[in-house]
Length: 342
Image (tube, rainbow, N blue to C red):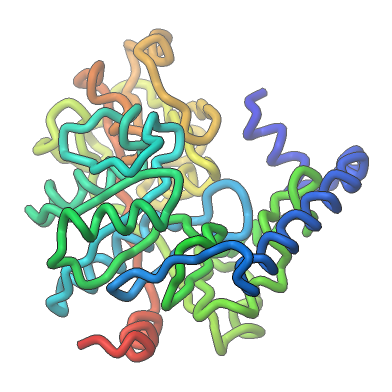
């Protein structure tokens, strides 16, 4: 059983042994409380950028769907004539100081999400979006603006807890199915911050909601859903096809925070759970060729984020399923109204 599966059982299913972590969670709460207070009163310094900053994040560990929302938002900004830049943490990368991401960057230097977004806009829109990664978001934002002074808005992917970076609009993405798990802070639960943090942001985006939670929080909440159309070959990016191209056994391999979302997307694409084997790695797993040695005679399907980590050894039987998203248009209208753009 992978680490992700163990945590999933702990945080999102009934489990009694997690209570042994509650003292540590309380200590963690004290740390984040005093850290937030220190930024609010000015003990810790925050930095204001020269352009509006939109932060997209979550209060839980694991995937909630931030990256598809980031892509959607950048596309909307480009359509109204804005010139957005993107800053990311570059999780699992070697980037210590601010580092620019290029089309041919290595995952170890850029991180999977940043590189995937960079390549998506180049491949689908023929647009070169400035993307920078680094641990300190404020420093990364400054570096991007120095290199690209024509940028007029910054999007920060997963920057909610990076209070050193002042922001003009905050969006929290919530998994509509899993929500906040058992409601405890890490390590006893999946929460990075207390649920009350939701009351401080400009908007909540619910990804794939299946309850009345949306109606109960409709003043701030906007719905988001995924859709897919065609498979893309990992070796030949110009080769796309529907599910009929899959003629052999199928294995769905993923290293994302919420793999069940990916498997649900395969179901929507027309594949039943009985038609593919599930192989789950930890979130942000850096794939190697040996991870696929048992599946040479099968068709391999993965997420677009995972595919960028396989470009050095991808074969004809490697496919990924691009994810697109539909988001309530009222979210974008609210954002541009508050930022007074366009």
